[in-house]
Amino acid sequence: MESSILIFTIMFMSLIYLLIGFGINKDNAEYLLAGYNTMTPKQKEKFDIERYLKFFNSFFKKLCLYPPVSFGFMYILFEGEKLILIWSFSQMLPFIWFMKKSLKFT
Image (cartoon, rainbow, N blue to C red; front, side, top):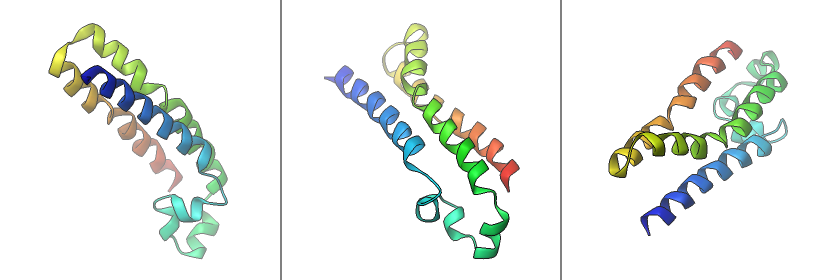
């Protein structure tokens, strides 16, 4: 039972990342993209949304592979609750990199 929940979680996360990567575009970014949706029209004119979306979509499409690959790697190194805990915390690492890289667009 536990393993099926874990597999479902990994697959669900990957699917969500993939859907974000394919789902956010210039037409709906005004509503769905945090930060961009609160900019004034003048700020939006200065912001290169097409270049940012290219980076954003590419990141999330690649990120969909991270949960299963990182779990496979962690499975080799750890077991039990330690495996789940370390794997869970490791899921934040790509977002730290993402935030750092996103700053160059501001």
